[in-house]
Image (cartoon, rainbow, N blue to C red; front, side):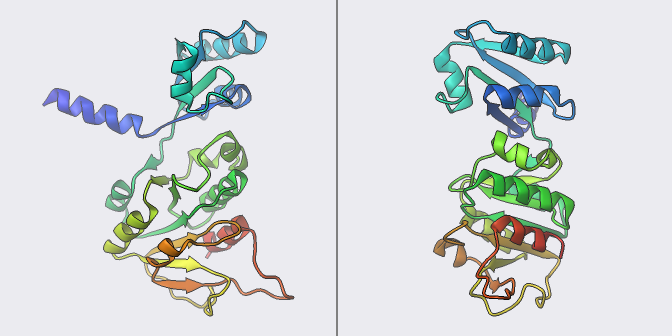
Length: 251
């Protein structure tokens, strides 16, 4: 029984661990004491440098575990051998979870879901707006949508570590799961007749925003219950997806 409990606790912990890479990003995260860090990973083949020495010094000063790996092993950790620069860092995302855990803890919610939003700066800015506004979680597809990365972290201005994030490998299935909980899914579309301001939203609402150029994909659109638009003037066809998200976040 104890081993089973320890396994579940360990599994739950590592589900909240995000690995970033690259010397600038790792250095910035190490210096930010608001970020909880699990472990610093270094390649044993790294050439000695002041930059690396300072990283090690900061990690030791914060009591962070340091692990050394051969280059191949580090690439498996970073998942980006071409850009990791011999360093990776495990960050603990306190608010990272899955849809089942989120729904179990919320009787009312507003969620913004991203379908293949490819620009990491857009994803970061969306997270920032959601953290500041009336949104309870951001739902990210791990397929097509920009992965949480140093660029996303920077664009979010640190709010990534304050905002509940739900990650899914199957956005369609996850939206259907929300619908089974009684949620209504709204797809944002420039072609929709109804303004986002005119809709009466229920206490369980999911807004779905699509790719910067293609919008919401047909498969995801088929799951949505209704379409809403942001009315435009002066012939403007659409807004940047991050701007659109900010309007929804402050409804």
